[in-house]
Image (cartoon, rainbow, N blue to C red; front, side, top):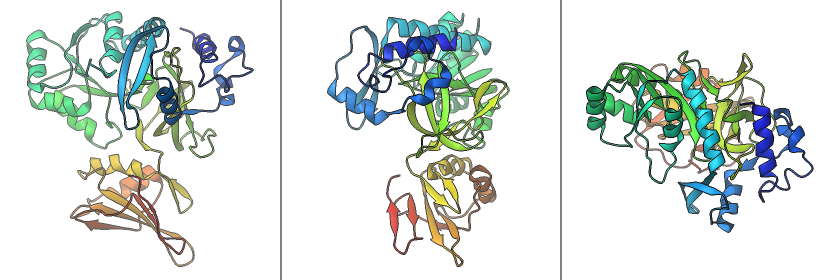
Length: 387
């Protein structure tokens, strides 16, 4: 599969889509290359929600429908054509072959009903030559029993369920995990691997995009599945590319979607990107959201990135508040309030390593009141209540 050729096909289909017609006006799909993506304004999930609200019926050519919960729509639909499904199947099969899944016995423990989960893996595993059991979610004891009785040695599940399967006695040589923060939570992989007795690898995807990045056995970050997507990390305010190693918003161009194109789709997820041997790598995976940002000591802080760090220390990943206060001389003081009795040793160092910011002090409380961010630097209290 040649990425540039596939991208041209995606662009050609998108030119006829109402959401992209103006964005792609004057663009020649036959001459379009990945370097030209910067010409196209990114699209948000909110824009898609508005479009689908006005056009709720499946478009002509729809072969498969998935639904994702949406506060505004109730359900946000995803439409795929037969051609989309064939491409996705072949693209993901190539990824699974690189992971050595040909001939392996695999249990898929994601849902096959309504949601996209199980389908993102199932048919591609078959094409890759794996033996597949479409188990679906729940019943950890049963998964453990089936694995032992029929010698299944690969599990595909979210990490929290894999942990339950391991605690129920299930043993797997390999876990492919997705759907929840995993490798961004310090120590989580180690706990899961100990429970299942094998290796655990992370993957990232969404219903709209499919699986677009995954780890290799080297465990050195999530690499773009190049047949599936082109990944960028942009400054969420300027929408300009950030330098390698800096945090920003993950923006994805899906190569497996033509009926419902996803070109420069703003995921709202926080990531760091680097290039290694020509491949885009997310060394920390996806570790927060870009919805809320505050500048502290001249450094951009995305409070949600603290959640996985707190979880790695056994704290509630949502039980915190960021307070920024003025210090004499005009500098900033960073205060972290925690819903905890004590501050775990090493937490300050972990936050500094991840964000580049030194915490001036911690405060503990039984409960956190107010918004996610309290900014006291400007003579009055500015509260951001979005959590």
